[in-house]
Structures are given as C-alpha cells and as structure tokens.
Length: 169
Image (cartoon, rainbow, N blue to C red; front, side, top):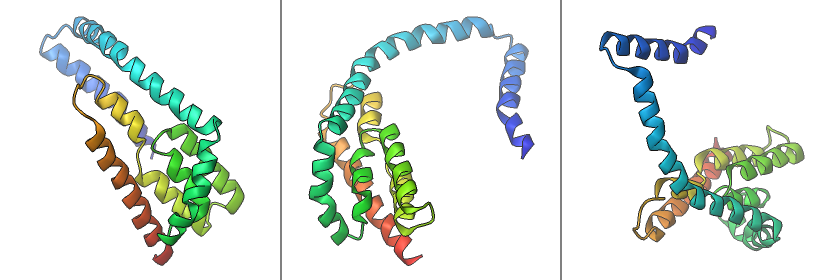
C-alpha cells in the first residue's frame, strides 16, 4: 500500500526527466500554460458563483424542505426511501451540501442501515449537474436545456436503480 503513494511523485519525476531528455524548457512551458488558465478561470467565475449562490439560496430559503416533503411520497412509490429525498434534491446543486446531508443520514440511521446504503448509492451514482454544467459549458453559447435535462434524468434513474439493487442485494 505505501507504494501507491509514490505513483504521483514518480509520474512527475518521469515527466521531468522526459522533458530534460527532449530539451524542453519546462519552466517556460509551465508559465505559458498558467497564462492561458487565467482567462479561463475568469470566464468560469460568474457561472460558478451563480451556481454556488443559487444552491445556498435553495437550502436557506426553505424551498429544499418544502420540495423534500412534496416529493417524498412519489420517491417512496419508486422504491427510494423518503429519508433520502433531501439528498436526491441537493446533489445536483451542491456536492458539499450533499455530503452534509449524507453525514446526517449516517448519524440518524447508522452507516450500515438500508437507508444509509441507498443514500451512499444515490450520492455516488449521481453528479452535481449544475456545477459541472457551469464548468463545461461556460464558454458555450448553445442551448443547455437538453444536456442538463438528460443529466438530471440519468441521475434520477441511477438513484432508482441503485435503491432497487440495495433492496435486493
């Protein structure tokens, strides 16, 4: 196991040695790459700020609790425990918020319970759709409704299938 910790340093060393062998000016290449990253970061910032602010408003406004109570019976009918409804709602918006909800589920029901297993599968099989969309589509002028809708449906289907597997495996 301790050898696994050496993989990343070994890769850096190999890259450095390869650059020396090829007579590449490594520092100049690095600074050139950093120059290109600054405009990218500046173009991403408004989208990331919007996603983070909206996800916090979603939680603090009470809309999260209201929607959780509203969709819990429908989720139960699909085989998803109503106790993880908040996780299913939060995960597309905020990874850190979903982690906090997952931690609360562990504390309330125990890490080995059926509900916690379903929560883990829901957490691991879904993505922070709006955050990823902000990063990947920041420079795109295309309509993002279809890719976001597909990603949300895929997240939801993965939660349904994951809870089904947790129940029967």
